[in-house]
Length: 346
Image (cartoon, rainbow, N blue to C red):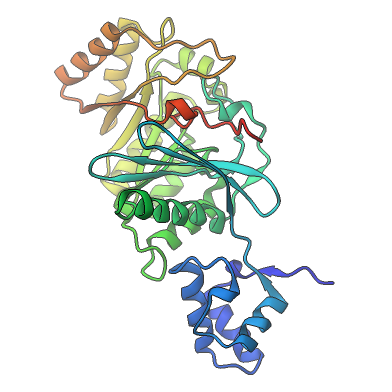
């Protein structure tokens, strides 16, 4: 028997054509498209404004390879972590992060990760495959439903900071964002989406050339080449000078400041030299800094720096007129915090 096609790989025009070829009205394609991308339907049975005969026709040719929440954990602080099962049995994790004023979805873009950051649990997992656009979209749709159910409000923000390196899955991530931001999708503003990358200069330039409207964050963690190469070994292929050039190109094209994600570790980047290097880098690239609380990862040996050195970073950055925010981690008790996603249950 021929393997059925995932219907969400079809454009609206292709759906209209399918119905025409099967002696049905083309507008049925519009209806099905709306069910798939606006209403996030998981089955053809849900498509109640379409006749049973037409639904059976769809069943004959297509499947909807939607993700399923395999396990949901709730943190004491309200954070929700979803272990979601993909159609081929792989599991990835996504997180709902609530605050008083907003709800953020932290979504994954790969099964595992193709990079080797020594401080990150996800990097200890072998990369199995890229996520498809619909699998990324589904994570957002599910968290939007959870936000409405548990917090009485729609999802307000999305960060691509889950499992995987988004720029190593460039086309699928951008297709997913197209669906998430489209009026005939989830209609979210791209300004409420942040893509976080470990810093791949060629792909950052491609983002700029593609005139994307979402925000860019870079996991920097050190502006000293030797230290960055030690904690993020892949970065030996992407020197800081190349990254700086790409980020200047990004700003020139988009007029959007980059956010530097920065964790301070004891004995690694907790020196005056490290602070000075970060200040110098930020002065060369229009940017702001998010200092992120470190979340312990098994077998990594990393430790959070002292409060004194963290305050020293803040004072020095502010003295040099660099915007700095301190991000307190949420969901640590369920391993849902930044850098902790590792599929422990799989």
